[in-house]
Amino acid sequence: MGLRVKPGTDKAEKGFERAKVAIDCTSFLIDKLELHVEEKDRNALRRILSDLQINYARQRASKSDNKRLPPRKSRSFQRLP
Image (cartoon, rainbow, N blue to C red; front, side, top):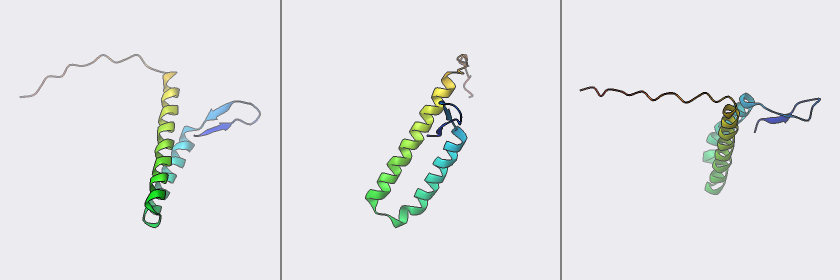
């Protein structure tokens, strides 16, 4: 999930851009393979892709939790006639 150990340290870095590209490429390949694989394999590939996308979103959200901005005040909108 875009995690890799930084050389010279024991710390894992999150490479969100690389992870996004990898997920997009995986999605593209699955789309191209759909006509050539059986339904059970197609479903398995889609589940794997969904897991990757969900894990990416969770990791991305956990990063933004550290830099969370204060909630915005809700705006009231007037309904147009």
